[in-house]
Image (cartoon, rainbow, N blue to C red; front, side, top):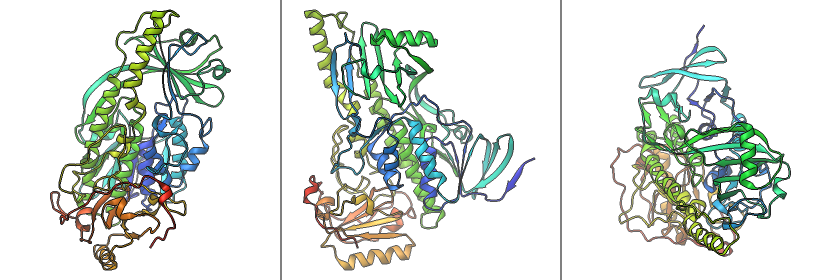
Length: 564
């Protein structure tokens, strides 16, 4: 029997991984009715992603769950996120190179962002996201639920779903495909993945080894990369109860039995300890983008439209950012203040970012030591010289993989039809070093207010006008009037404890719900028809001369806050 209820939901999200959960949360916090369907049991012991970067944790801060994620850190939030290259982990091993505080995970206050990164298994992150999602009224989450088919017209989508063996037809305004690399929604919209499959094959072994943390002398770290006579492998602690991961480089068709995996761990580390193998599987690094991300009211996010090599920790975090970008735009459209260009801008904004991050991840994959010196583990003059050369090579080439702030925070949406672009070339981009800019399309530069809040905490669920202390009251009033005329929600924030003009380069900046600058200027100009998606692509905002802002790098300069 097929059950059908007209317009059951506003949005159906297919997939309850990080991208799907993020999309649903972004919708749910705006009181959008959402159904999330997931056919697989999430969780397990074998996560691919383990890095929640500073941008993702900033989104969690907006959702009120960044502290909850910190509580889930299996070794405590202070556990050092170091990457250490060794010949082997055991007593006979030699250190080759070391990268401390990878991905900016140290829990220290930074002027550049409000939340540090966190090393945590993906299943723990999903647990926190799912709990938040289930706390939102109007959101329905169904596991053991499979999308079988979907059709659409100009007004709605009809989704045929199997829920624990019971067929159901639900209708919604939009259907979001967050259903991973084998996406059913991607097939439904006729998209294909383009690029390169199988750039590298990796093996992922999860095991329990009591005492392993105390059996080596290299100190705590997130990953130990072993480069020795036996080849390359990565190993590191993953969760409580002495659970570790091990990733050896194997041949294209090579597999491991549990007994072989345990023996390889002992051989590669040089540590003779009992190993209980919990899981083992092979996976491939790919460089793929979908030919298109949307057709009508069906739209792809996350792995359904982009697959990255895992070098730099970008993939899962990019999927969450997709959900944020698409989520606020769908919500604004359904609430009536977002125009027809708003949802259409999702692919325009996100696809160039995906391409740049794919290129960066592939570049990181390509950076590797050349032919391994045969004397790499020998306690001889030749062995010491080989280790010194290899260590210097690693230290000079691998930093871009572990220090990624320029890529994580520095890529913007300057080509977006929703952004009032400025004349002149964009600022130079460094993949490792983040240089904040308030140029439209980019993230609003961060600052701390004197009361301890982040400036980002002042950004609302609609647009926010950030005003300098000397901004014209008449300009602010006109912005509020124009917002009301267009029906666009607008908050005005005038934090007096920071030099806003110094931070953004002008007196006024219009900031989107996702903390990206949409427009800036010294005098208000009505741009809501463009930034809210009512103006046709290619329309111009009124151009004004700009002076480039420079980030106030010391939080000691911030005193007293008044938000108006």
